[in-house]
Image (cartoon, rainbow, N blue to C red; front, top):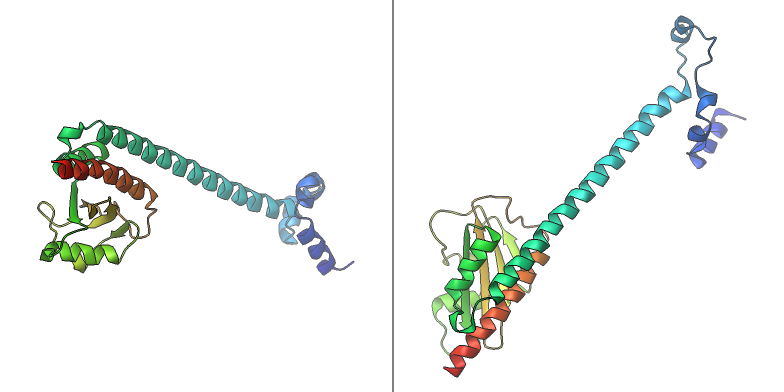
Length: 218
């Protein structure tokens, strides 16, 4: 049997060294000086650090998994509380400004604005036309570090934002966009998961449906 045969066998049976760990320990009668002189390294001396490294890697992966779980739990708890707060608004009190206020309060965010356009508008304003063109270009929430040029004229509050999220909203009679902005560049990363934002948009759309129905009745 050659060295290549041994290597090939160990590659096919990676658990062999773990099962027979004691057999590869340095012989008790071997002198340390002799071992150094002959540059002999026991297989256990090589394998143990590698196994420890693999264990540390697995521990890090488990910790990342748990951290993601805790982060998701916090997000969905926030979604539930926000949804309840919005649905608690009395029908006669529903307004865009009140929805914005509730979102800022419940989600603890810096800036939040809602812009809507009637689906039946014959001559939309310049701002409304810009919103409609932007909504035609997206079908799900999008996050940016720089505001989209199509609607960059929709200013929110004072100061410049380092990141922002744009959530399309739709009811039977309205189309619109829910905009979140933050001075934190990492708050709304372009590659972040937007499922949470989509759920918020659905809830806001449902509340705006009440507003639309009330205005039509009025």
